[in-house]
Amino acid sequence: MKQKLLALILLSFSISLFAQPQKVAIENTEKGMKLMVNNQGFMVNGINWDYFPIGTNYSYSLWTQSDEFIKQALDDEM
Figure (cartoon, rainbow, N blue to C red):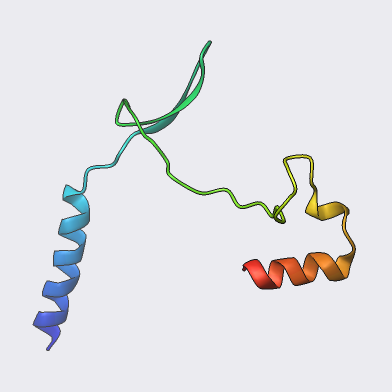
């Protein structure tokens, strides 16, 4: 049992010795900032959520509504 445990510990340490760390940096140029991983540009995908009732446009702000309305809108959307 002790030999199996020791082998498992040695295996986990040896795997970490061969792991290659990645170089992560932020490049700041006149065009803007860019995330770089291993000296190559890296794209981060994501989403942006905003609440717009039907019939409103970009000038609508949920956060200027009453607290009850905000809570209901967030409960419905989330």
